[in-house]
Image 1 (cartoon, helix red, strand yellow):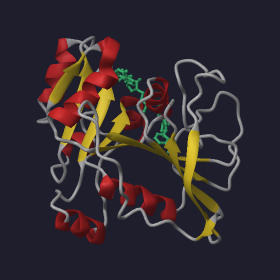
Image 2 (cartoon, rainbow, N blue to C red; image 1 turned 120 degrees about the horizontal axis):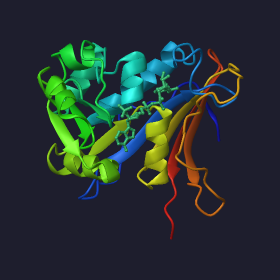
Image 3 (cartoon, helix red, strand yellow; image 1 turned 135 degrees about the vertical axis):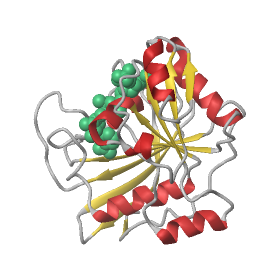
Amino acid sequence: MIESGKPDYTDLRFPPPRDDRPYVLINMVVSADGKAVLAGTERGLGSKTDQRLMRELRLNADVVLNGAGTLRANGSSSRLNDEGLERLRVSRGKPPAPIAAVLSGRGDLPLGRAFFTGRDFDAIVYLSDAAPLERRQDIAATGRPVQVVPGDDALRAMLRHMRQELGAAVLLVEGGPHLNGQFFAQGLVDEFYVTIGPIVVGGTGVLTAVEAPYAFTPETAPRLELVSAYLNPETSELYCRYRVRRAV
Ligand SMILES: NC(=O)c1ccc[n+]([C@@H]2O[C@H](COP(=O)([O-])OP(=O)(O)OC[C@H]3O[C@@H](n4cnc5c(N)ncnc54)[C@H](OP(=O)(O)O)[C@@H]3O)[C@@H](O)[C@H]2O)c1
């Protein structure tokens, strides 16, 4: 049943993580026609309530991850930007903000952005071993740790590091679409949170929430189970929480 109002994501419960990776959530906002960008960014797709839900999801996460494309387009951080939510995290024995992480193949990153200059949250760069050494050195010079991952198995190596070295139990992936697509293609998503906004973006070839490296077939398409859905009568947004069904 669709409920009215806004969900409360401040106290989500998840199954215990596996040994080799955290429990993985993806959060995105899309238009009513399924597009993930409006004039090149997600700004304008979601309301303040949607942004509040993004922060509530961060409250539950140990690491917040973006692809390098999103960092280049928008910047990225793991800040909650809300004293009440930060206090709640601290009362649960966690630092005020999760660790921010970014994954890059080439290492061509905007080193002046808050991801690198902010000191109110920890951050880490996962960089493919194919990236030039100078790039790796330039990134490390910002003071942010760089973890090199094999180009042909970057996601699994990154997730193993988050779980085993950072002790992360919950990872929140906040896009972009190409990163999401790889998570889905490799069967590495546990829950998918999507806000559907009351706007039509149109266009052809405009990014959707999941840009996988290949189109799924009826046999390989990830199947979802709706956990909750809320309709916000004030914003006309729909907030959906899905769990990914596992093959039996
Ligand atoms: N609607 C929403 O909720 C939402 C959320 C987030 C972002 N967005 C929008 O999405 C757009 C950006 O998304 P995008 O799909 O173009 O980019 P993206 O998914 O954020 O990042 C893609 C980049 O991540 C790195 N990467 C991905 N997989 C990798 C792997 N296996 N190994 C190494 N590196 C890997 C590569 O970085 P390098 O290129 O550095 O090698 C790749 O080019 C922006 O316009 C942003 O506004 C929308």
